[in-house]
Image (cartoon, rainbow, N blue to C red; front, side):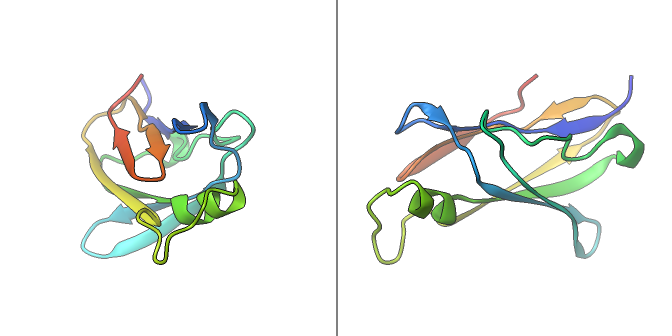
Length: 116
């Protein structure tokens, strides 16, 4: 089996996929290195794997979800400052497998898990 990374962002307050959210992937290996920047599509997914098999390495990573800009774009009434703006999720990938890190988002809370 080869390893790769995907995500899916769902706007639980609006009951729909989170289209147009910017996501950054960083590798954490003594320094924090930006590997890729992507934007979610109509289905709340990225058009390509965040980390494809040919680039997969076990290690520690961080996905950064730009939730505040997404909430602004959807017309969610803003607070100043916004309760959730940038959501970093740090996780480890220890074996060559499919890692799926979804984000379930509302203006005042979020959750994640290792999906399939």
